[in-house]
Image 1 (cartoon, helix red, strand yellow):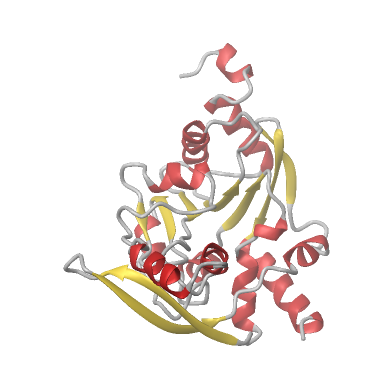
Image 2 (image 1 turned 135 degrees about the vertical axis):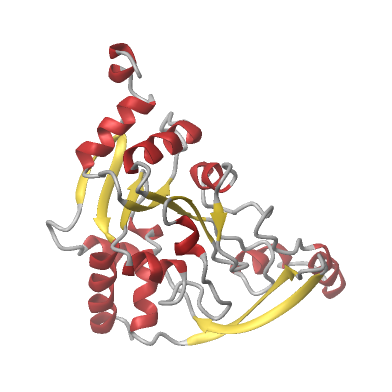
Length: 264
């Protein structure tokens, strides 16, 4: 058990759990967490432990474990090959690593996401570009289904999280990275596009796959978040940095209404 000094020291597990309780995180909660720990002083493994402690044995911790380095249709790839000759771009494509759910690091998701993904007992969904990693009671259930054609739709882990009554915890980040809003794009019938990426097949060989899915667009997420109805989220401090907590269902419902009215 932590002593009184530990409880009073910001950034310790006990202090973080106390902050999480004040925000409204209770035992048994299923929590989707987005976090940017740069300049916060928060250690990713300590935060992971605090989150797991707060949700308890009956709860589940989920993080996005997205990857884009294995796709030649991603904006990141197009930026990397800009200015290369056709031969240079082809050679770069040949060297691109194939997605392997067991070993491929997430990209741009932050240190907490990697801490969760690499923790013993973590499970990860199979999508080669928008996977989720999870720990806890419902981890396997929530990540079990993730077809290629549903990055973030109803039959993805995000859809499963919404159906399960999960909450979103955002730590030192704004609504621009609120993944839950993407589920609304499926509900409003957003246009689709072609995606392509390289994956490892069961024999360990690399192969390219192509599929059609919704055109994911987060360019207006800040605007969607700025009109988030008062009273649906709880704001507070977590280890000295800003945090907000809200139900996924409320976020998706709000985004769906906003997109229906304002997206063209």
